[in-house]
Amino acid sequence: MKKLLVLILISLLVLCSCDSGAGGVSDDTSEFSSAGDEVSQNGGEENYLPVGKDELLAKAKKLVEDDITLMGIFAGGALSNGDEGKDYTPAQGKYEDYGTLLSLAQSVYADEQIAERMLSYPDYGEDAVINSDGKTEYKYSYINDFAATARQADVSIISFDDTSASISVKISGKTFSLGMAKVNGKWKLANSVYFAYLQSEIDVQKASGWENSIYLSTRQNVGSAPRLAGKFLVLNVFLNDSFTSWKDSDRKNVEDNIDRACEWLVTKSRGYSSANLAIDTQSLFYVHSDSVPANYEMAFLDIMFRNTVYVDVNGYIEKNTPAGYDGVCVLFHVWKNGSDYCIPCDKENTDYLTYYGERAMFYYSKNAGHQPSSYVYMLLQLCGGELLYGRKDTEQLTELFPDEIMLSKKYLSLPLQDYSVSPLTAFLLGWTDYIDTQLIQFTDTQRGIK
Image (cartoon, rainbow, N blue to C red; front, side, top):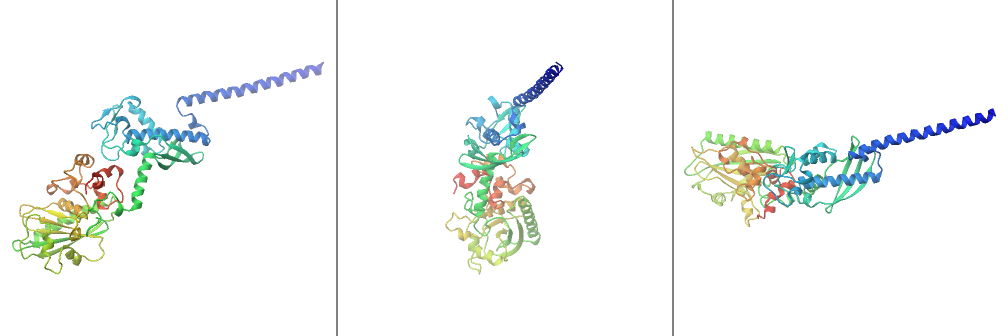
């Protein structure tokens, strides 16, 4: 009897122990489910749990989808519905609240700088989308074709571990490799597909070389000054004729101003890796037996040298240029009233080899001197820079680069410190071996000018 009671008691204890264990698992499961429900409500359940390849792929597809949405808004004109308004217009619908866009960008990109660049795109000029007292407003002066047409993407996983991944994104016929990183437990993209596309365009240009760029006009990479890069020489020729002559003090003033102009150009070029610019100057003197004309005569300077050992300006430059220079141009200075002009070599002209020696003519008088900006202005033209005023896109260029020296028509009276050299002009000069996608529209080849 006692044995039976003992067996019954042991059985009861075992049953109680099993019931208690089952209740503990149930409670733990309940707590886990509650936490999972809370994360799900915050829209990031998969961010906080270990993921396999399938789960990571789903997350990657969602991030790329959100990235496409953002690049469509900030670079593709999605909010404007095809209407490029000149003034900022309030957005309607889902992204009326700017905080929605801000949160989206912050949730997609691991690098804050990528998010900031997207939210302030385009890189030049006014932002396409702005925060106006918490409301979204848009204004598109530039829309990128890739961002405007990109829709769905094929996404695949290349490799991954617990904290990082590499994915392949095929979109609009192009394939890009992007990184992913886990930041504070959340998976995010290391870059935007759009910025990867822009970099790929730059890489193509760099691979082909500046000299072969389809965006150069006929005035670049020809003549004695093919580009304003490397070791460069400015020949100053002070002309005396049968009626006028230079005084030493006036000549010294000109030389000083040209030196200041060259120093400014070298300083401005230092922001561009392809320039590596150093400029030397040399002063020469030439006496013309007749009178130098005060008006523009394209062939005059070559005619002046015709019956000399130099034959033409090309010969004069060649015989007066020491070895070792990558480019050279000549500035002629005459002491009389007249209108300054320059003659860049232009391969469009059938006789462009006649003007292979790039030259400019400066006129002086007691009442009219020249600021260093005058020389900068002419040197830039001789080395491939283009006049940017008086064009259909001048207003748009002025909005982007209001201090660009090639936009000014009143260059003779403005101090040099008021000017800058825009990335557009820097490309034309050979200071950089690529042109930003946003600026391609301003090149001669894209505007149909030959």
